Length: 124
Image (cartoon, rainbow, N blue to C red):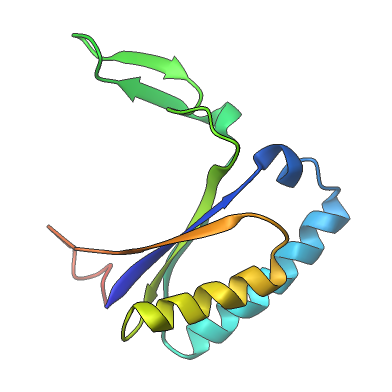
């Protein structure tokens, strides 16, 4: 079953890391992702740029309003995600715990994925 592991953290903290601090964290995270890939569990993943680079389309009026920045102001922002192919929620939680062990701060939201109009080339 496919799950999304959504990675949240305080982007002010994350984007204030020095290049060395960021590289150290990403090396540890990369080692976890490499284990998942070798086990055939890792699908697409992405690290998102900060919300200052985001654009939001709000459907509160007609035509929809396009604004700079994130949809909601929150303490923690969505900074990236992984798609994993695992047996069940418990296994998705195990993988999330591996990330949590090497990544300072933040939270992970684990959500099952229901595919629609899936391109079989992307789901192989």
